[in-house]
Length: 91
Image (cartoon, rainbow, N blue to C red):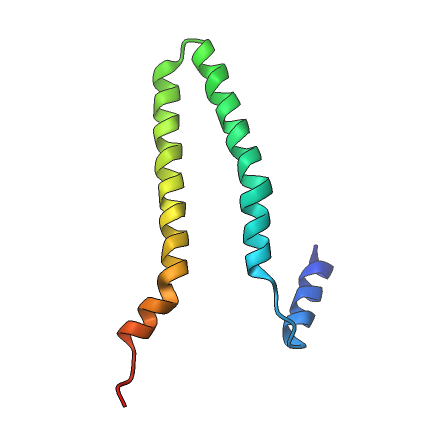
């Protein structure tokens, strides 16, 4: 693990750029659906045991969490535009 961090640090110092869009795209296309499927299976298993109120509570918390993550992604996406508007210098 520490060798990986040193490798990333060495590339960053050498002027190499990290492809953050590729990392985000990979997470959204591969990891997020798997996590959501696992979460869905847990909810189905709990509701079959008669724990419907716990399932509804967990589902609500998960939906609110997804909304916060989506809001953060939107804020990051439009952040540079907001900074340009707020701190633009008039010549």
